[in-house]
Image 1 (spheres, helix red, strand yellow):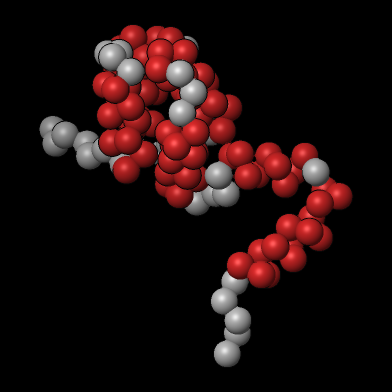
Image 2: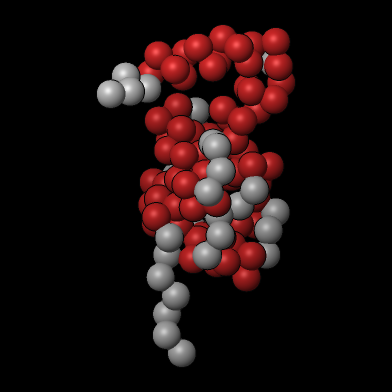
Length: 114
């Protein structure tokens, strides 16, 4: 049986677990998921947002809050899930009065159409 390759999200998460001085088993137990679920998350589809935040909470508890790690984990999970990062999605959903300002800001970020 061939070994399954980790996704970019999986590679990043495994390194962050090591950086936190945790074993993978200690990590997935702290997050509250089973071993097969954990291995599925690092080799196939990254977790949904709720689980992303639980993972970050476990890592933050071990090493302190790290905004760079937080953004990278959320970005990689979103890329592999073909979604908008969980934190950005929450900001948009939670403040519909700001949608027009968001559209204006996004339009300013896009290169001018030729």
